[in-house]
Image (cartoon, rainbow over all chains, first blue to last red):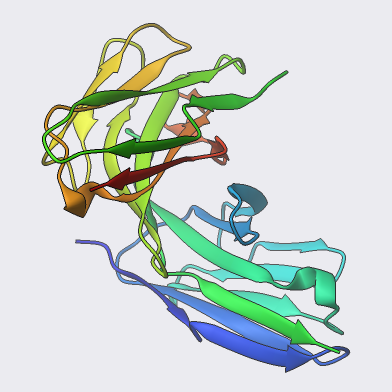
Length: 112
Length: 115
């Protein structure tokens, strides 16, 4: 059974600081996704990482994938309040059926 | 494009009542999913449909049934609601080509309370 673990689960940081969220998964997969959820809202896709060494960047967020270590990171650079949200990673466990297993999410609060 | 739409947005049921949650997508996606999200938790897959005409159980299927009515629509039915089914329900869809899958697109959610 695939397990997806995120850490930390809660993160409070100051504006302007850098931090990294980690996503570990327990079985082989080469397809990982990051989603963002604002409070009371739905999820929206941030990044799709499809191969070992993949790196994607959008604004102050950068995601990477190391399939050998079964690890993805979401790095936040110079955080701003607008980045406050819950971030989920998700891993496909059966590409023939398109099922994804989600981590429990990391709730990020950026304080002035 | 409306993307993924869900109805209703909110619903309150009494224990034992039944209801159907509706989901539709206009992106011509093959695969559709139903998740539940409980407070402070991630998403748990209830049922999914890899393609029109097929449905399969996910992680937490007990107490639910689904119908893939056509390529656009995927409904979730609670036959006899229980308080443990109080949750936020999200429908999602994704494009698939053979064994290649893109990211999922989510609907706005249905907030269900069972008394």
